[in-house]
Amino acid sequence: MTADFGLNTRLLHADLERTAYGETSEAVFLTSGFVYDSAEQAAATFTGETQHYQYSRFGNPTTDALQARLATLEGAEACIVTATGMGAVSSALLSHVKTGDRVVASRALFGSCFWIVANLLPRYGVETIFVDGNDFDAWTEALSKPTAAVLIESPSNPMLDVLDIARIADLAHRAGALLMVDNVFASPVGQKPLSLGADVVVYSCTKHIDGQGRVLGGAVLGRKQWIEETLQPFTRNTGNALSPFNAWVLLKGLETLSLRVDAMARNAAAVADFLADAPGVLQVRYPGRSDHPQAALVGAQMHNGGSLVAVEIEGGREGAFRFLNGLKLIAISNNLGDARSLATHPATTTHMRIAPEDRARLGITDGIVRLSIGLEDSADLIADLKQGLVAARQA
Ligand SMILES: *Cc1c(COP(=O)(O)O)cnc(C)c1O
Image 1 (cartoon, protein in one colour):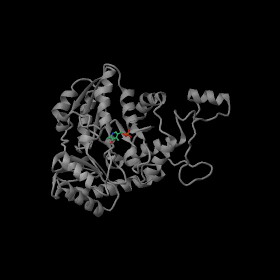
Image 2 (cartoon, helix red, strand yellow):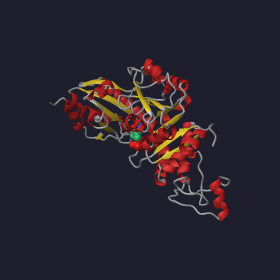
Image 3 (spheres, rainbow, N blue to C red):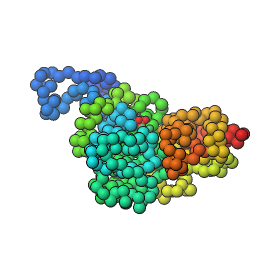
Image 4 (cartoon, protein in one colour):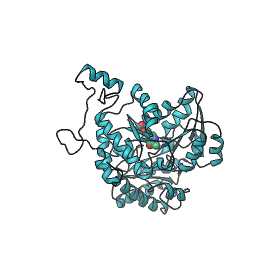
């Protein structure tokens, strides 16, 4: 399917291959192995002369369909899907770097991404450096030496800092590095890092792409040569394969992705506006608001403000806990990007392992609550938040 079609059309029809039964939606092939017509065909498949499925760790019609559709959606030459989002991040980094290399990353990363850069890579002799995402003197300094990879997340978790992807791409390329962007918070609908100069985009498909609390999944997208020569041998041989069933569920998720993400962003904007003027709220961070610290950059590089809102509740940890426990509709969960609105207290959950001084540096105070806004009626969400705020002040 050509790129001339609009986003919603591509989300339904791109690379749709029907079997002889003519099913409407793509079939699901939960099969592990494949058979050959002859020994010659098997041999030709292994040399690459013939295209034939070999084994689902190497390739499967359903996971291939997801890869093709994600690549079309992202505007990427190629895609490999993985068992989880962390499978995508770890494979992208570990397949690309070797002992003696340098990796530079923004400090505000998803917890497990931070762990890989801070703890795992150094174990294999990779030098790793963290930079505050909007400190360009620090980026320039960190990227003044040859570097293998740069990993950033924008908007970041949980404070929703927005990083200048084009500017960081430029500095990364001058250092010889690939820029890898964890685009989970924006989703493929909200931001196109490759068009801003990034080389690799990674997703947790668990989040908005499924977005209905059903399956885990991950994806890495980038140039065909890098995907085929660097990433694919790594994922195939280390076994980081997505279940075809999960791939099929994610294909269903893609069909409604843009409808869901746009509706979630509209709800999140309404929630953020309500919270900004509500009593008992010290601070609201939402990329779609004009008071966001990087509002101009949001306008230039994001399609909308996304579905996440960070809010600082009066009364520190106790105030935040009373607020969370007072919510009746919005559930307490560290997941995000779901159709159901979710709330979490980063300082005691997702970011509990980060030292208090590092949390302070990231702006994650004890009063911060991260809201992942879903598809409920916005008036119901606002009513729930209102009574949560009343509970927060009943010390
Ligand atoms: C959830 C998440 C991941 C990890 O994805 P999993 O599917 O949970 O492995 C990575 N980065 C970000 C920003 C995430 O939100």
